[in-house]
Image (cartoon, rainbow, N blue to C red; front, side, top):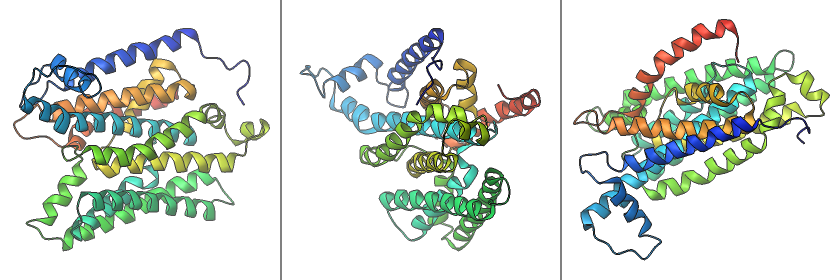
Length: 345
């Protein structure tokens, strides 16, 4: 239960409205970006015609581009960006470390192994996504089990993080093994391209499957916003307020892992989004997770959508998202390293 004094400042509540307006503008403008130009107003009319009785003054080609190609990709960028940002925000608060990202417990490495194994076995996109999702959950489950078993006489969070590093390294070695035995002319390029991250093959059916775990996990994390605020102060303070820290920490890890695994399953490995966006959101609205989580979701959605727009417009050949997010995020990560000496605000 939230304490009576824990109220959000009114001026902070106004900032998400401006952020949502900016996100809506980016959403509309993204339909105009691509090899086949579509005016944003026409794209919005095509979308509105799906639910309203509007006269179609556009061609079938325009409708196919808007509904069949760009809409699934734009929605996927919004969903994945929001998911990675929410997960990163939750992990940073839980571990009280500004350098933590969604892949800290090995979920990205596990998903990479699952996807690589599915590609090696010749499964289609549905099989790749299922294997990636299962691999991510398996890796985090192994990290949590090791942390619970070895952290009884020490710092359980530290042990869990170290276990995540080891588990991630192990699954990365498994990925290398799969790539080593894969056909170098057909299978290996497919594995390599998936590991770089991309949204060009996402369809509406994929979004429908990924949306449920992302929305469910995100809703639970949002409901635990005040609890995350308390956990940031340490276990002693949390227990003094009557919180079951072990169960709550496990619940946060499960939800954040569910969100991350579902996102990675449809997008591949997209790095640094869950690291840099939570910091941008914290600079905008402060450390209160009740407001920080939705603002991070909106910022992450807009950020990845902008990066995806760049990926399909910079060059004649599409640039993988993982490359662009790393190029953009690396300078910011260096800034965080310098800022960390002065504390985490």
